[in-house]
Length: 339
Image (tube, rainbow, N blue to C red):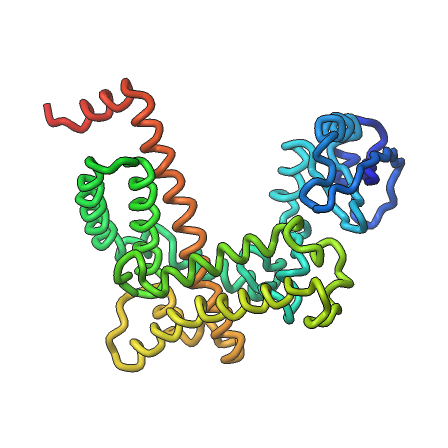
């Protein structure tokens, strides 16, 4: 494994050197080589000497370039460098690395996932829709349903008092409640229980997507030439796995989206982000019908993925903190009790 600092004059260079113009040539480059022994799995690369590697990276500078078996990685090794490049210069450096298993159309084929998009017209379309749909004024129409779901959540939590593992039950209920809210906001669809097909398919699609994106799970993410190995070749079962996952992902995205379109056609659609966009032709006038459908399918799914996990995790952490720290629970209870 080769590790080298990038455009730095010294082990700790100034940020002015880090952020020099992209077209300028490097001023000086230091290089260090670390040996590793193959362990039979990519998940073991670098693990035995990880602390030595981290120490060496910290000595090299704020921006470090890694070359691992032909996989090129740039590490932003300080908060200052990350802020300078990813916030102040986000238009130039906001693109994300896309694993081959997600990128190739014959594999999982998810390069247009909102979280993976480069800074382009489709990305700006998503930002415009999300900004218009999630501002303070726009989300007010969902407050009534959210309050109703909060009351139902409390009722379900009260039923967990006799559970042998109540905290796991709390986690499940919090994630389910957030999933209900996200499906309502995105599609105007009311989940029909925890085994609702739309919910199960969405969960499985994102679970498979995360697994496909892990570089250690599929060698094709490190050796792109493996994309051209025929499916019948011994050891190529991973291609069949990714194609199966791709079909499940397509179903998970198209199912609720087609449901919204059908409700709009018969006049029974509930208020939602997707139905609002579909009724506003000016919003997507620059997109062909095929790109429009693909883009809105992705948009609906990002509501579920982004809203459910992040919000539910924050709530789980809150519940855990309240259960662990009794003094804060008593203070909270006192503040909520009318004097």
